[in-house]
Length: 400
Image 1 (cartoon, rainbow, N blue to C red):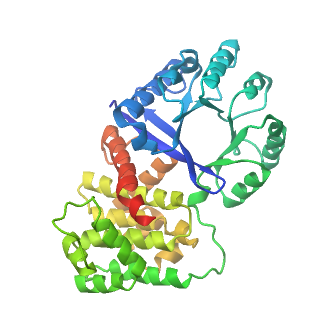
Image 2: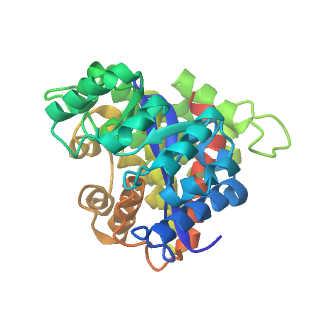
Image 3: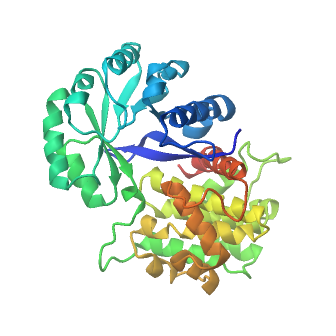
């Protein structure tokens, strides 16, 4: 793998289920403003995604949106990829001529799904509307009223509309009511804060559980008692440890046995994860974002010889506002956090805060720099992929 970063951003349907991921990439050898370099970058990410990493590792069972330049389309690069797993995303800077139209029409006739990125309703794009499948609308490029007018003009074509850069739940609800079916942005991971909202009974109990489990002097006996009081948590924890993830000599038959086997550090982690999942009424996409963030903070900590458990907890709790729909400072006040960890989450101070800020920037693909603490970009890319695999194989099966 050459020195480049790879990322992904979720594309959700109207019920906030994951529909697909857009594959993102950045490499020091690629200047994406130059046509030839951009085409090479696309080929590089295809090679690394499909051959080196594996599409299933990166996007699971979902579709992968991949950006293609004019040169890629003329060279018919998408034909090297499985048509049932990818979406051919045509970049907005492609100059549409008869050769582009011919090749895209051929891809469509062979069963490839085609999306037009940052679409503007201009004369050059009209011939493509006869056979493309998805139109991506950048709602930041225009006012909401202008976007609504564009949606109305596109309705007769019967295309699937994808609104990107959706930042608020208000925008999501409006765009959905206007006819958009797919959505991309960070609105789903932001809290819908309601003034005066109080925690529900189960959420309050879970906050108390998180508070107890994260006390530095908590004992095995106290942890066992806490977990045993929650039937759902007990079942999920036993189900997890009895799974094939652990090569244990015999079956675990009690909470105390589980705690003794796993150890306090690992038990604390899994109680944190399971408690947060049970507290959330949000779609899995929200919890996935938070947990991948926490894991990435942990693995970055290991690279720089820091306390990985603290970094994991920091990443985990940084998403508490979106899970509870409460202001983050309000949610954190109810937990026994050190001032260092609280300040890192709220104000991004210290090395902890720098790590969290880098991971947040990575999520949004807004990195000012390609690395953190002089870790090689190639290693960071590998860490990110490890986090995705951890979520899909070790977390998701046990929080459903």
